[in-house]
Length: 126
Image (cartoon, rainbow, N blue to C red; front, side, top):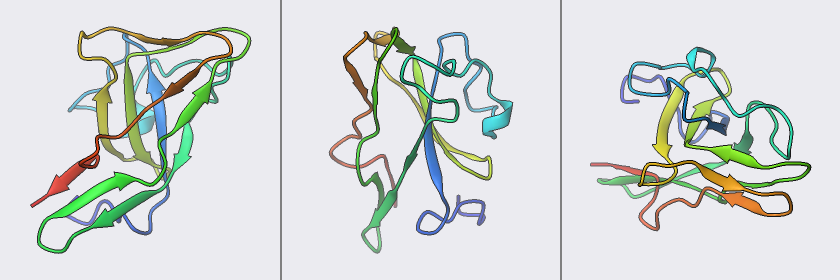
């Protein structure tokens, strides 16, 4: 981030969902390199949802999502264990486990899966 790989206020970002079998982790740095994204269908589109990141602060900078991404399951369930924020050009900015147990998160048909950012933001640079 600090080497100029990411430009939070001008790059285009998406959030994608991944299965428990995904290799998403610290060694995977690009979206294309991550395995086992949720399959296209049931209300999920491969590649995820476009999101807008916001910056606040001067000495300590907080990065947040302007609006929490929401998927509505239709025709079947959406099941995921991880979410990743990545630049559409391919680099992964950050990722998270969706449930601290750790377990899968499931939205059944007609229900939503919302990835809600922490009230303090997605992360902070100090």
